[in-house]
Image (tube, rainbow, N blue to C red; front, side):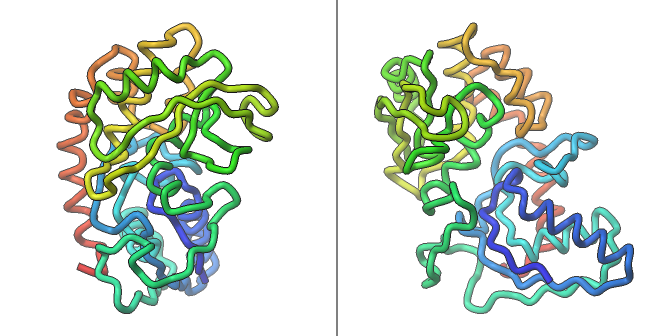
Length: 274
């Protein structure tokens, strides 16, 4: 039985564990039950690059986009169908949720699904900021606001904020800050960076923010930012090559349109609440 709160991002690995458990259940002739839960960052927005086939790993268990707009139960249906997992799957559906409301409109109590996922704002920012985790950037682990801040000792936060404001990204603004993480990357070191504030959740999208962040770091600190680590969670070679080449974020985002349309057809076959 799987009864765990996901946050709607491909590389948040609870659903990877679910997929592996489904395979184990199938191998041993066991029934597998998913007690479904809402997608906290809503179940309608789908965005970001789709994982390249053949690049699957624990941090990217199936060919879905970074923000898939699905619940664990819907993903389980997709895994069973597309990975041919015969585990006598049963999804116990949600009542009173149609896929649209984010978590703070569901009337449910927020419980941190993991130690650094401390707020709904962090969940919304994670599909963008979390992509930086395997590069030499602190994403706020070891602070009070993980995934809402990012920085490094070598980073010019004021210049980064100016550069990102010039991109006119929907729904977000940026404040230069200094912080010292107590754990993880650059633990105990003073970092310059930015705090990201969502000022219009309806307008905000993670993909423009993710691509603009990567592009700005590449342009502003080409010798300091170790961009190769960005591949680890992105898992899309065309997107990575475009970022390294310095393409504008709108041009990079356009690369995803065809694969997102194809994913939309696959997704539609697995939805439970629309």
